[in-house]
Length: 305
Image (cartoon, rainbow, N blue to C red; front, top):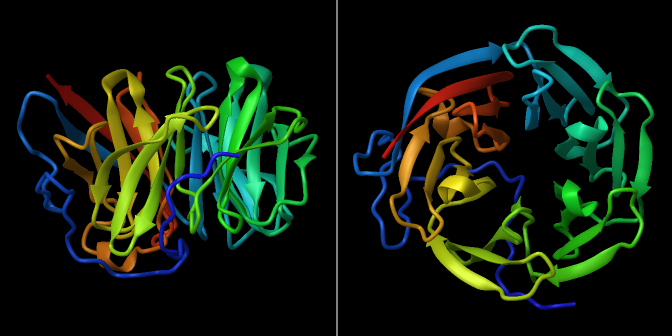
């Protein structure tokens, strides 16, 4: 097992209020979502798609099937709807702490972590045939799939491990450990890289490694608390969501940082538990949950080059 850099513990689920942060080497304002240069992303329109939810958290997209899926950690269930927000359905209920959700659309499967039971589970996309595929975990959080290689990757916040297994749950491997790791994680399966954040006092280091845990690299630092990350590998973009609810992006080296959206206009300082978002890269759209208001939103993105 390869040992990553050691860092100080932070608490992922703590609701906090942060002031404007700065990306090391690049100035950034929370309200600035129209920074102009030759590689800027501009939001042209936002839509509130679903309202009246209890506590929506993580979200995943089935673009081909026209569906979005999300977890609710208060009602302990997984729900889905059409991409326009219509036809909301409960598809898996009776969970004890659903976390991140990931889809294998080609095989008609969804995977999720459940930190309440220490399991990774999967089911058909309609919620039928729920299976326990990895058990005995301490605090599983993020999960990502490399379908082409028949692998799933997940993080365990309690043990500080990044682990992987076959998609049926067999052949569990420890591929890295980060002392005081909080579990924020993203996968670029095609590029053979995984990305995560580690904390060191008030700084948060963005790092990456090969999928076997080798060749660990420090990319750039953030000076504000981040709850989730995502990648647009084709454009070389790294997205993150702050505990204040704002969603930002930068190049993979940390340059050209810009704010994208304020998910909760006028209430962002009260939204510290908000964290779920997902990219529709081909469709130029960004979806996010707003657990503060019990809603799901979508932004239309314009890529300026």
